[in-house]
Length: 54
Image 1 (tube, rainbow, N blue to C red):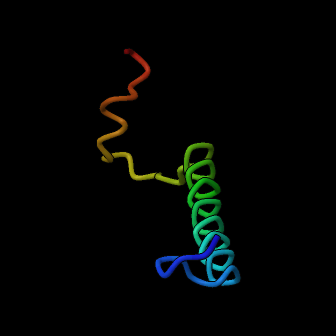
Image 2: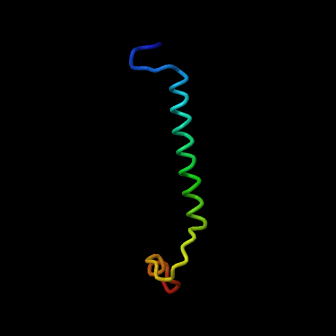
Image 3: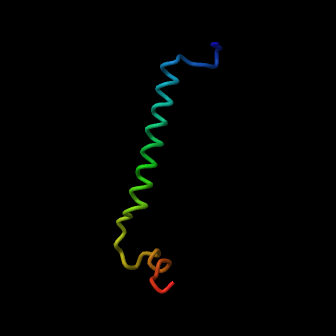
């Protein structure tokens, strides 16, 4: 089934692959920053929220 609004199969596969790679990269970055955020500034607002006495 092919109509005028649908592109060639290789184009659809290329776009799906590109968006999949971008999505995978975002998930990798999310887990990296979740596990090891790397913020060391003692005046960062997260240290007010994540105090040990809470």
